[in-house]
Image (cartoon, rainbow, N blue to C red; front, side):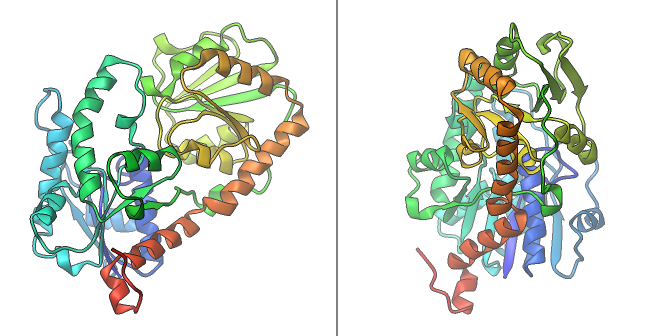
Length: 392
């Protein structure tokens, strides 16, 4: 099977949940015998990434992997510049493969990477089926400030266009699928597949649960992550606990308390594992999310999870392995933190163990990759060659 994977960057060259998902998806495609054309970028970088570096990161050779680097150019600083830059990038992607779109069996596009291609396809260009994935659809979830509302206003129309014009739309499930349906995408075009983590990242047993409760927050310092609500909930909270913060949290947004330990931004996966292994509960009070990698990784390391019920988080967290609460509710957040502080160690141990089991059952990348390819094969030109009926 020949697949074009259009991305806005991949790890380790670009940091972010979408980029990490792109990296793992590319690696799974290659492991399953796909001949892959990977289009990637590094936003605003002056120097391109050598193809050999990408091949090395993915553990692949040029026989099955074609790498195309396209610059993501900066336009201006006026409102909406990211939309204009994304469209320009999609035009460059289209031109790079202009004569080859019908030669692929499937095109899997992240974010706006296929925008220009979908415009041409709407006008009659013959191409392989195109699937898009926008991950969290935060522009259709609640935001807490004016800047967020302005960004949502500008992002919504192009997101609607890309979703409606695609042959398939990949969803994490849960509330994400409901959002996609509300955009006017028929149910039969929505493919629900969760994210995943590598098996070697997943422990078999959680770390020992002691009487002192150890919470951990991992994330960027941005409004939608719920840091303000978490700090408000922690203030005045009694009990034997401590909370560790991983991420570039600004001093003015920090909780100044002896029980609050800040580690700053950490890029070492080994160090993040160490901190997760020392904790009992991940706290994720976001106002908007897709299927956060940080929750999957915490579950894989044997943590219970206290999270807001946003995006596809309900696919990961339930009473058996944690708590789901409403976003923005400080009182509810404080009450659940207090309950988890008071919870007997053996009861918390059971939640932590269930997190591990849930990841092994449904969220390993080896299975996510196979399921993705199965869905693609059902809806692609390759199915005609292989004797499988093509949908749609």
